[in-house]
Length: 147
Image (cartoon, rainbow, N blue to C red):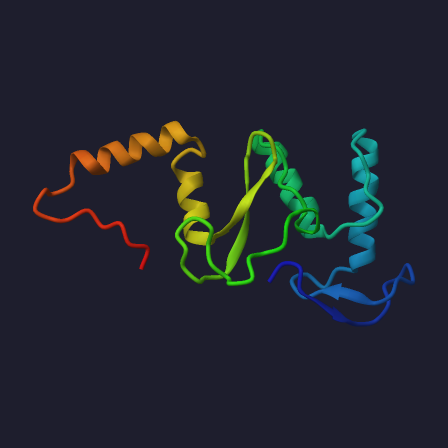
């Protein structure tokens, strides 16, 4: 899995020996390479940061989105472990606005992906709701509970 590490032999440049499981690459060498590449492109270089954060930010830039905020800069996860959208207890992920990059809340992956697939806007969600209501069988009571 990307990002998992193990302690191995130091690389030929004499770095610590921390290596990636996926490709046996030296962690320090990869971070130095990414930093040098960003410098040559005139981008802001962070002295620290995980490769996963660099990957997420690059992906957001390619898609034309604002990068997500770092988890350390966001409010803590809810203590009860409930999704702030569906109120179910599930593993939580950081939800953010793709256009501004602002933190929105802690949601489960199902809700986060669902909101994203429906366009990340209130108008798109309302269109989906209108569709469901148009095609909802009247003999069924509309469920308002959150399980």
